[in-house]
Amino acid sequence: MARSKEDETIGKNGNGANLGFEQTLWATADKMRDHMDSAGYKHIALGLIFLKYISDAFQELYDNLVQRRETDYTDPGDRDEYLG
Image: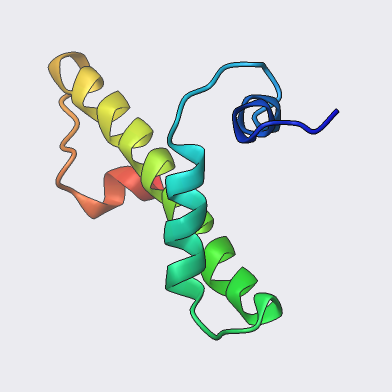
């Protein structure tokens, strides 16, 4: 028996949920890649993942400094606070 398009979409995300945005994300990524070889596109994708990781790590440290500001008199705007 042939599988329907809906059955394929439900099974792709691994948990059975049909969120509906997977196809849109895939089409957008494919459009961004254009005529670039997939081996070259991995550098762009990995770079974006790295930037997201760095951004999240910085935000966590910044939030920690803001919380400590009231007790330790730290300044989140001071560069030395991030190195310490």
